[in-house]
Length: 218
Ligand SMILES: Nc1ncnc2c1ncn2[C@@H]1O[C@H](COP(=O)(O)OP(=O)(O)OP(=O)(O)O)[C@@H](O)[C@H]1O
Ligand SMILES: [Mg+2]
Image (cartoon, rainbow, N blue to C red; front, side):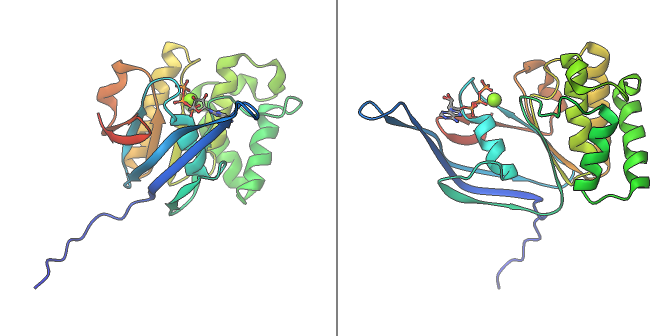
């Protein structure tokens, strides 16, 4: 009789992801294979680090996971809502922090009440409430990074994908960030974080390394 294995369902599963970029123009155009069959799965409540050299394809993979970039081959399956924080913050320069939250809340189809509650919690958790009425083009780099992280978290997504989220954070914010992540884990939410910091290794449940276009354990 076959053994029945009850595996914990993945909240995100990528299989056989391939991506190459075309560089230059004819007659010197050439193809660069960045991802050559990446498999990656995230289980509920897992905090996973994604590491690899500069240019190894971490951001490319994350863009494919969120659907911002189309892979040449492979599939991505996600169950639940996705939050994404890109490596370069994306913002509307004329809108204030509050206005960004309102806009994203509507995009996530949240009620005004839920959005305001979540926004208040995020201001408190990351400590940037005093910039609520400041236009994005007048924010410091670190505060802009907080806004981007806050927007990714606003809708309490099952899967949170963060591309080097704390590069510009001061020490206090860095610690607050990890408190937030611990809270996500406890709530059974999953987080995938691109990181270069060897000192963070102990904070992850698991580390996945991209090397030669493939993902493997570190
Ligand atoms: N739009 C693009 N067109 C052409 N080549 C690209 C494009 N985006 C990325 N690349 C190339 O693909 C490779 C992987 O880039 P990617 O940004 O995914 O790396 P990364 O691992 O995130 O690096 P880093 O640690 O520097 O952020 C690099 O060699 C990069 O030059
Ligand atoms: Mg990158």
